[in-house]
Length: 241
Image 1 (tube, rainbow, N blue to C red):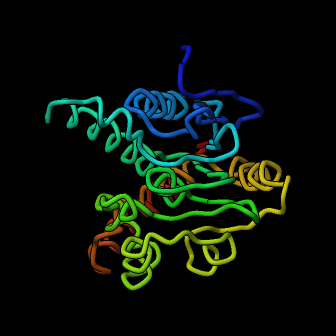
Image 2: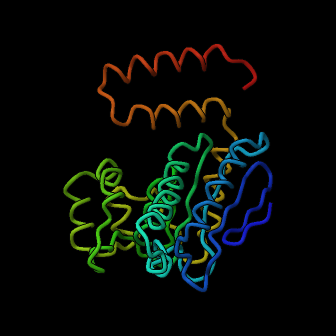
C-alpha cells in the first residue's frame, strides 16, 4: 500500500515508519493519523516484524496537530472527525503489541510529544527539544495530560502543560520522559540498537509484557496480580512462540 504522509520500510525483522510531511514540520493531519494507524496495524499482522521504529523526516520530529486543517474544518462534525483520527492513532500506539522505539530529533511538541512518550523506548538527540506547549496558543494538551501524569507524575505533568516550556534532552531524561540521549548524528544508530535488542526476544513474551503494561495501568495491585498470574501461565506453557 502506498502512503502520502508517511514512509515505511522493513529490514531484518524491524519495521521503520517515518512521518513524512517535512515542509509542514510533520504536523499531524487526519490523513497522516489514519496512515500511521493503518501502517501499525499492518506491522502488527506481519509475522516477520518484531519491532517498529518511528522517526520523523526533515528538521523536526513533529510539531503537533495541523492547525491549518482544523481551521479549514468549519463544522463541529468535521472537527470531530479530525479528533477521532488523532485518538485512534494514540490508541493504536498504546495497543501495539510489538516493540516500539521512537527516535526524536529537532522540535517535538504537542501531538509529536504524545507519540514520543507512548513509545516503549524513546531516544532523543542531544540538541532536541520536547514539550506540551499548546497553552502558548491559548489551547491545552488536555488529551495528553492523563497519560503524561502517569509517566512523569502530577507535579511535573502540570508544570509542562501549564507553562508550555520545552525540555532539553537532559531535562527530559531526568523527568523520565525519555530513555536515552543520543549524540548528534547518532540517533538512528541508538534507536536501531534498542530495536535489535527487542527483536531478539521471544515474540510472545514481548506481546504479553506490552499487554500487561497497558491493561494494568489503572488497576489496583490485587487485580493486576490476578491478571498477570494468568498471563504468566500462558507464557510458561506456550512453546515455540
